[in-house]
Length: 351
Image 1: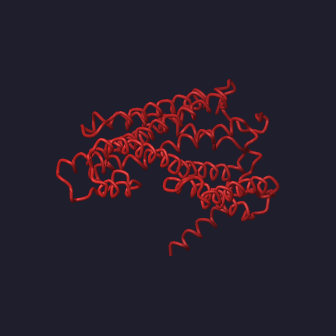
Image 2: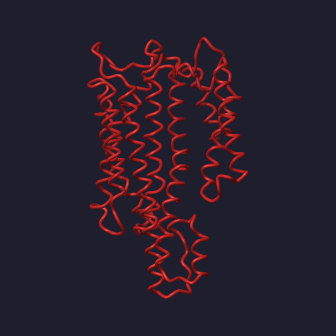
Image 3: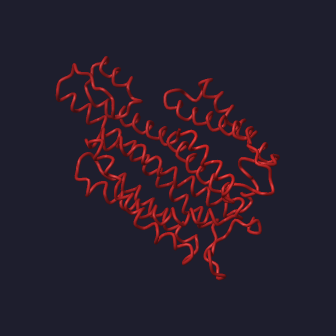
């Protein structure tokens, strides 16, 4: 039943929604492009994830990188010559258009890293329940909801550049605040300020970003641009979790190794802990230990997780600042001719 309903929605869209089709082109699917993009991204993401437990000299990782890289190069070539490309490269001739999607990649990548690692921090280290950890992000959601109408008008009032620079900058400050708390403390004095600032920054950014993207091309390309926008945000999350996961594990391992050296652990117990490092803060501590020693090992694990988490948050802040810099360098400010002052992706704006 669900499949039939979904098919009906697609058919209605293709038949009645002008933005879903281009009257001047045949409605064909770019199967080669889709296949190459999947293989390329899959190979690179696989290599990034597996690099946490395998050396970069591993033949499997090398093969995955070569396969992924070759597939992406082939994908670009196929899209260049295709009559109905999955990713129309001509749209990216505009510096402003490309800049907005690069901003999307940076901003949503940073946010994805937070949403992946923050619940682990709150539940495994801070001792929150699953419900409390989920509720910790409610201020973020409420701010996005309450401010969306206001932020949607920022493009008309100020142009796209100002909100797309100010918003990610505020987001970056929010990520820095996430890196400050230690173990324990009240939510309202530790993570709430960071969540609130993150929500404010994203509220300033998201609506102008979406408005700018959707008004950047002619009507027949609106569906394509919407699809690219969604794909870039999902790709950002995919790559960010893989890359930030490597950063997280690296910081965790380095800190844990240093801390365990200061503890008088038996070799068998030390090996049992070392064999679980990929679990991060979820490491099972051996039961055949004195209570004080168990407490010291648990404290070392928790502090090591926080060390890695801080690296991830500072990396996310750097990504947000890169997004702000990209918007400053590539997106036009408000123009004097009224209306959407930033319809920038017209081919005449290409650089």
